[in-house]
Length: 163
Image 1 (cartoon, rainbow, N blue to C red):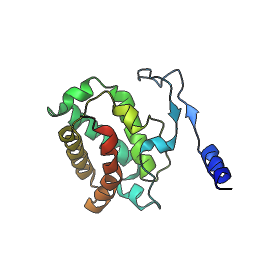
Image 2 (cartoon, one colour):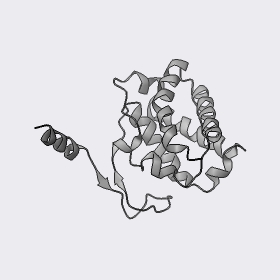
Image 3 (cartoon, helix red, strand yellow):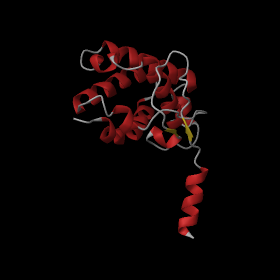
Image 4 (spheres, rainbow, N blue to C red):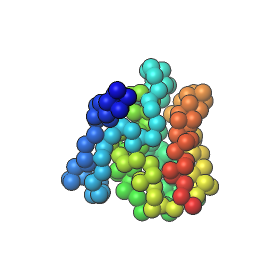
């Protein structure tokens, strides 16, 4: 009975292959299974955190600021220079919106395969987190709400840091 319920749970998870044609402005990627589980964390319950981040518009501003800061940051700008920034912005917005229990699905790859070729160090990961904190502060996200999101994102360090 346990195997049967596990099978049904797996079958009910929405999964699809990424389209061969990338969204406008994005570079093509190898096909992969799309699933919200690729976001790396389960969403929060309730609407309070999504509201604390000022909804989709606030998340969009935070991600745009994060990417701009990070591209200009001498500690990590070189890593991002080789990235598809259009795709990065879109998938980060989806990821944050999904985790904050907004009306979004995450369509990006899982964290390990997304970052495997970047050679990211702990120092570089921490620089990105600093930039995210600055972007959340600029948006006026309360400190407690920031910490809750960072706590959900922190375990992803294992998949992102590869050297």
